[in-house]
Image (cartoon, rainbow, N blue to C red; front, side, top):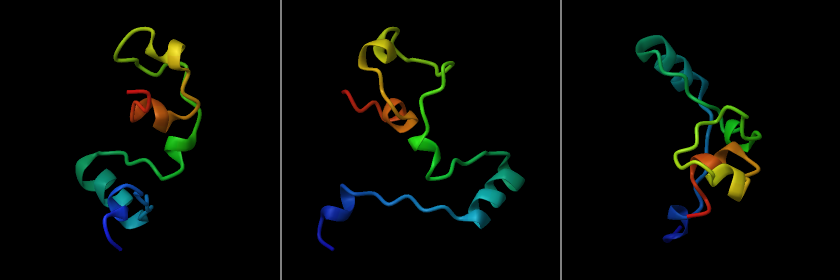
Length: 68
């Protein structure tokens, strides 16, 4: 496996974990599909102008700030 596993994360969906976090803690977990969705129009930008300048195509790109 080596060190490559640190750079290529694999996102897994686990229905039991999703349900437990919602039931016990009131936390809504996203699925592995959610970061691939388009950036919502009302997405809060940390720095004004970043989203309009960089124009990330996916929500994951905006969340993980790929341009930095």
